[in-house]
Length: 114
Length: 116
Image 1 (cartoon, rainbow over the protein chains, first blue to last red):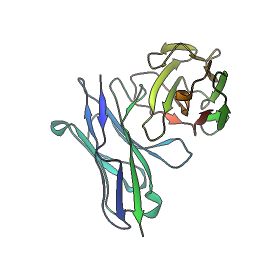
Image 2: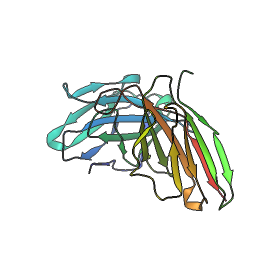
Image 3: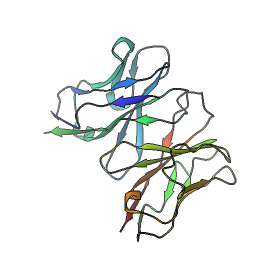
């Protein structure tokens, strides 16, 4: 079975500062990895995904993530935070394709200070 | 429609009542998933359909939960004899292709269920 660990439940950064949201996974087979964002009272929006190939993945809104197999990590970064980035962020894993059931972490709430 | 549509957006029911939650996926999407998101938690998988076939229902928490997709399009999640622990947001997601491909899941805005 696969699992996802998102350390910490809340991250606060200043506007313009680096955003780093950590995600570690556990999987017995090569994983497919995802980051989703959820705004209040809305569903999940895909930020980016890793399936195969290049380990540095670029997504929407200036976010990117790097798949590091040796560290079983898929941390999400953005060079400069914007107020509109304040939301809940979920890391997820699947093992048989992007269109397979997802196992999510508990999520991290990102706050952006003016 | 342009996205996955779920109704109702909010549902309040008394303990013991039956409820039905609807999901209208993106047109042409073969795969449909239901997830349950408890307050402060990540979504958890409930069940998966490929067209009208329910291929995986391993996440359904009890036999009070039942899902169907009779014509391979709209899906209904039914909860019988609701309990307070059923209070959660129920998310539906759909995808164009079948398992094993790289097409991502598109999520609806969810139904927030509150059991009194």
